[in-house]
Each structure stands twice: as structure tokens, then as C-alpha cells.
Length: 229
Image (tube, rainbow, N blue to C red; front, side):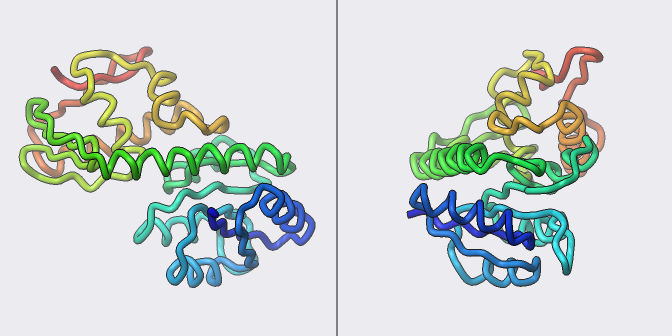
């Protein structure tokens, strides 16, 4: 049985989500505050977090930022903020999905199922271990989700890893923003193209920190991105 943590201070929404979760066989825990959520997440094994952005004590964005320092548990934001900027901020902080209120509990359950399937798939790949693959200055361990650049292990977020791993799979091939979105953010209907640009920017910064004189990521204006072959 999967364990879900719901962090939501609006009673009506919380009741509807908790009912939907229990009807689908999930074990759900509910709390009202961001600080309480972080305490629960530090001490219990949850499989996914449904996190409201507008909490009474602190922003859900702050909670996600703190959580990502120690955990890769999937996070789905619930929020009344529908602007593109807020969606981009949430996804860049490491959230896996973003639902705008009002929303359908049935759609939320569908997104939870998709995220949990992906999490299980990632764990299966990590256990299987496909071994290291050499790609120029890069060495890539797909099963272990590790990438070295000039012998240095890169510390990447899940989305940075997803983008770089996809480019490493076909050096020289140009991927459009839409292709990158479909491959890396495939279950997030609210993702936007700008978040691809933002992750390319952070990837470049991490690669430059290893070798300031090299830039293996190529920008193809009006099209997308590739990795130097």
C-alpha cells in the first residue's frame, strides 16, 4: 500500500482528496502546516506528497525547497496560482507536477498513479544497473542515474539528469523543446517550454564549474538543443 502525505489547510479540499485517496486504496496522512509536513517526512516513509502552495505558516515552495535537500520523494503541487511563472518556479524547485484549483480529485488520482509508476520504474532501473557508458568527456551510468564529466560526478536534480541523459543517448542529435518536455516531464500537463531553457542554463553552469573552457551543450535557435558529438 502506497503512503501519501497531503499538506492542505482548506478543509473542503482536504476532505475530498482524502476520500479519493482512501477509495483508491492509498494510505493517506493529512497535515495543515509546512513545518509539520517536514517533520513527518523526516521520520516516516511516504511514497508521494500532495502539497498546497498557500499554507498558513510557510509557502509550499519553501517546503519543497527544504525537502529536496534530503529527499527525492515525488511532489505534486496544489495551488490557486495559475500563472506560468508560478508553474515554472514550482517545477524548477523539483516538484513533479502542478495542479491548479479548482481541480478534479479523479484527475489528481490519475496523476498520482502516473508518478508512482515512474518512481517504481526508476527504482527498478537503479537495481538492474546497466553499467557505465563512455560519451566523450562524459561517462554515464543509466541504471545508477549517475553522470561523470571529465571524471567529476555531477550533482544533478532529477530533471537535469533526465535532460542530460537524453542528450547523451544521441550525441549530435537536435532535440526540440517539445521532445525534451515529452521525454522528461511526460506526465505534467502544466509544464511549459521555458522550464527546459531554465534547466539547460543550470546544466551549463554545472558543466562550466568542472571545465570553464568547454561548452558541450549546443543551442539551436528556434529549434532546441543538442550535445556536442
